[in-house]
Image 1 (cartoon, rainbow, N blue to C red):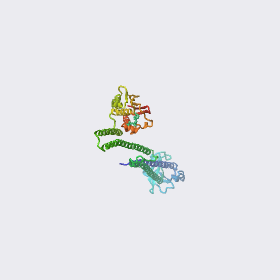
Image 2: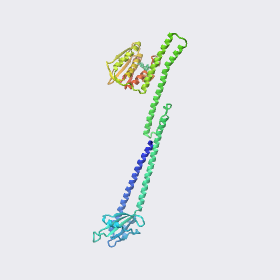
Image 3: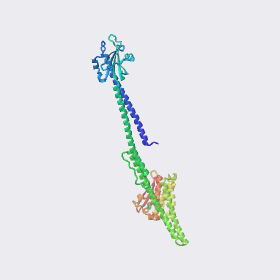
Image 4: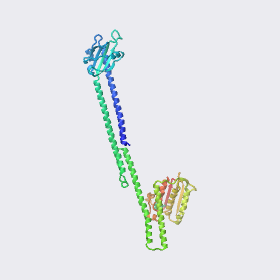
Length: 463
Ligand code: ADP
């Protein structure tokens, strides 16, 4: 498996090689065509001019012709042949004549413009020759009477094109190497940042979760975003880990209290022989502590299940009014021992979709709290009905109310307004936390309104 770095470099290399190769080849071919077209046009003009300027009676290349055609400047040569292909004149700068080929003699008269050919000169040098055949002998307008030639050595042109090839090839190669090098450096820099994230991820343990964070240069917006998301994930993990640690510590503390009481009672009972009545009393007290332990373990389990994302039992068609009445009935014995009234205000039926177990537990916890916090002679009111489009339940008591500074913490695990009193009632500060967790899993929420001295109202909304 190739890394993204290698794949990126191969991709960049391929694209660059193709683009630069195509650019260099195209530039070379176009330039060569342009140079040849210009050269051919110059040669044709000179061959044509020579054919026109020469005197029919004295077929020679006169000095004024050489001057007029600027032979020196372009390194051109001139030759004149008669109708039989016999050399009759040439420019001064041409030391040795280039014979007229039979093919040229045959083809040139049929052309309206000069015929262009590449030939090899007497000393082996490459030449380009333009041949113009003049077919209007004075007195006989259709008779061929001379061949005028303009030639040039291709050495200079070839050398220039060779230089161009070198520049284009070298330039393309240099661009390729530089671009690939720069890509490699950039990709390497990027890779170093990725490696920093990887190193941090590997070094993280529960011991350093709160200290380890990734630092990436802000030059790279993508990586900075990735690092930020990673750091946010670490923050969340850190918060979760802290909550979990606190939960375990609180839970152990809560479990230790009843165990310490149990142990103390048993040790005292065993110190000397006791009467049957004394043993019975100790056992009853033990049983109370064991029940409290059982309730605590059950609540912890409920929270652990909810934390583990265990789905609520399937939603089904329910009657909220009936649930409220059932809970009121179940808590009636507790209410009567506390001399508290329970009033239910509800339509006959409130059909909703929900989980019966979860709803019963929510309403039970809220009502139990309301009863436990009501002074004797007061009434706890359970009110159920339809809000704007969803059903709701409110549990109202006329108890002592909750101070505003406690309200934000009310649904936290193990939070108790008055720890000593709460424990005496058997509470570990989990009842509201469980109710809220279940409500949220249910798609609803619990709100509280309370005033010290006037009582509290807990509302379950969005059912
Ligand atoms: P517990 O199971 O210990 O009662 P809860 O989570 O049910 O714990 O309640 C958290 C805290 O809120 C408790 O300390 C309790 O005193 C307080 N509380 C709950 N309901 C009421 C209420 N209706 N009136 C006054 N205080 C309440």
